[in-house]
Length: 331
Image (cartoon, rainbow, N blue to C red; front, side, top):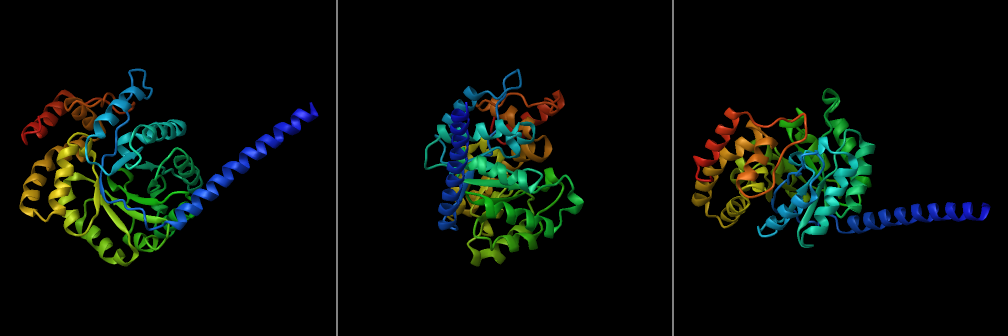
């Protein structure tokens, strides 16, 4: 028994050492190639399909991924706000990322949402997402104690996460959900960290986005628009791409808008941008992820139900959503 006990202890220690060595290796690799992760391009923040029993429906997820593989996305954002990450267990969050990484081509980036309320939990989640195959982590601002989330607290939080993360970190400011903006002065400070490569800004304040881009150009810092509703405006001031909920439904069109902007075909880009504003607003600020999943169903994807306490659209909301898409020729 003593012999077996010692062997078991050695096995546990070896396993921990192997995991520690993996993390050190990943950190060394990440830190050696910092600033070289190019995140430019369009990403859909993919939805999480649920079965009627509220469990993750991995078969439907796989079918969505197969269809997304035919669209010229730079990669996918997994377990972001539209993935309903607050309603998933920690194990489910990691497993969904693992599943996506297994199913999509290696040249597509997987950016995993790893944000938690505490710095310690975010560090641990970032490590797990890296082990699951994420190329980078997207870290939302902690917000439960938002009155105390000033620049000092947020700089400390993101610095601790970036110091420990085996993969590059992307800051995530989404005031519509968190009730706070990541302060500009905090972004400017954090942009100097070698393992923080960019920002997803979902606030829609183009003046703020332009200022951040202007002030961080020498740092090689990259900014992604957090919505298709202001994608053209963001490109016009130097953004490198977008994480756009609407791309789950109109992926080809959002990618087309990107290409028009990059080609300098601004008049054509403006006309397409006009047509994307109303449906984008419907699946973001107006009705949110419930509407996004319904629009996905209309477009041949698996959206399905949301986890409670999120409720289905009312009849009036459903009619409005149909109008917002059909009036622009998308239904």
